[in-house]
Length: 377
Ligand code: PEP
Ligand code: MN
Image (tube, rainbow, N blue to C red):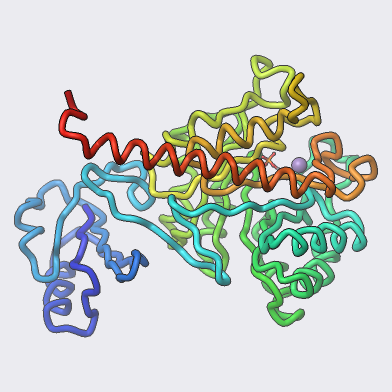
């Protein structure tokens, strides 16, 4: 059960103290308090965990400070939407806000290879007014003989360059708990010039110990990719691991499913699930068109499949795009064939803007329709 408190409830007030003391007196029920930043107000949610079936919703709704009590679906207790629950969940990290109504592009290198390429990528991003990027230092590869990423050795120059070019957040995959510490140490040593969003890759979606480690820390938000061979429900439960350990700043990424039925794309593009994830959970939804499509093929209209897939996700309401670019795709050590060129960054961003505007127009049309008297008949 979640108790949603009245907006801006003062945690120092007598009423709040009374509520908490009562909740603590309930046998077999643990209490977890979570603050949510709403638009212009602070919301507090109190999670009751344990044998809550015996609690009456009406009675719990009548307790001091409580606006509403909601019975939660067991599976996505922290990240899910529950019944009438239309509460927003936003979080801000290093000056960038994320929610189901925000939109951010993370264009960058699949893998850091050379310092020059990192610099060229970041220069191009700055020239286009971008403040977020992706940079892989730890690469999970199919073959043990493939380039595994430069690991912690590249972090100092990646972070310093990010600071130089005004990059606020780098999405960076971690494949081991130790990588989180290495990132924190490198950020500390370089004077925190940027922020890092930890990425859990599709191969690690159900690496529960890694999820718990990324969930225990609350410094970095986490981008979790949908597992490529498991159900959506299983992947959403994986995201819930992060939140259950304390980190609710979680973004869920669709990146295509592994099946030959998606051929000739690398994975079966699953962006029709953007609205589904937004309906089931409060997580902002990211799409990764690069790992979904996996090539630079284009259709007869000349538009790259990667850009078509991006537009499909964005027009369906995606909140974030993670996309591979490279200054010299032929020289990339990982995923060169799917990388867009720096000369295409402006075109890509324009295309994304068109799709986002189209989504917002669709939303306006829907809202106008709902206001008409006969919209339900
Ligand atoms: C990546 O984004 O670099 C990556 C490896 O993606 P995925 O986990 O979706 O394969
Ligand atoms: Mn890749």
